[in-house]
Image (cartoon, rainbow, N blue to C red; front, side, top):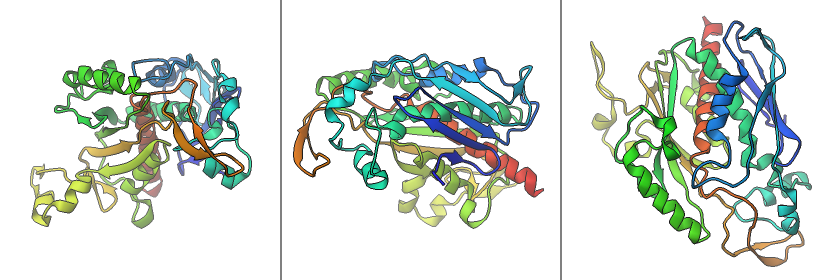
Length: 350
């Protein structure tokens, strides 16, 4: 197994590299009769497209998706859904000078150890561009879950160590950075510009909330819903931490403080993040994701080449200052894919 597939019933398999002809995938297991069009998929892709915002790379890609199979007259047929997105603005020559050097913070060294051969042009399969296929797969999952009334919100909670004070779910997708509130946007913009002039990069925290998820989703022991959500989020390259509900804060609470008491009207709190014993409780499912700084920094860095010689590296090319905001639609897509799979698993078990 190459690790290119995600899911057990609702399965996304992806292919493609950053500087190849394009990227794409196949979704299997999507029920028939779900309304689905290229324009619906494109709307989600446009949220992730490069070349937007003050923190984004200058690489320009239209990311036009082409449906190849599995849809007829605007609805899914129940068969495999194939799709493709062409690469249009790859500049492989930007990487020719560093093809034998291991970039700090990237997958260059580990890919070399695993395969003995790697695509040095933008990282190949380890590139953040790989996530374009996830967004399409997640959009297909979203189309399915919308028929059940399930919604997922994703927004930036913290950028460069500066945390937003408020959360307003309305208008998230229209705000720069997918900010949780408008008030923090100018502060983050100033921080990004400051770090850009320093030749450095930033990380942040993304929060995701799923609403109207029915109780009972999740499997005992190894396939807990929270375990699979953590796996889904950690499969995204820039993610280094995942919290469910209270997360790390729960470790400093007393049990009487952390427990979510129940009454005849429902739960009194949601420290568990909508998941108990690995199974959804019917409350909002809350996930927070820690995103590392982009490793492609303009500052000189210490590293080695393929011969093991120590060298100093300055990375050129076109790179994001921060994976946020473009990672936000990717994480949302992985949330949708996970929920779609568990909804179908639950239906199979009944």
